[in-house]
Image (cartoon, rainbow, N blue to C red; front, side, top):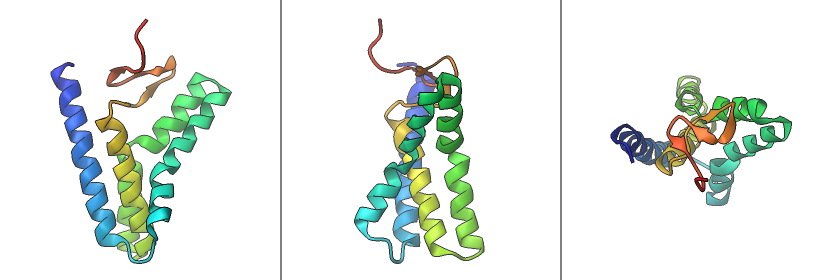
Length: 123
């Protein structure tokens, strides 16, 4: 594993842990089972791949960038809407979790080609 990829995976772990800590702090009412559902909700963007790799990558990347969860969290703090802050923290944690596992942002060339390198079995 290249050093740059290792550091991005470490960064993903830190974002994951920070997102969970922010959720723990921001959450006032969401039950644990709701948090688990919301945590995995960004993976529904895989459905975009039914429309082809370009649309799939666009859908996946739009939701899996760190900025998406960060923006939701910040808006939730500013307005203040604790539920929105909690949702943003979970979204951020999910993006970090994916990066930690090596699932990077997708290339329009195909699902297995990411900014962290190829994923899956190598041919």
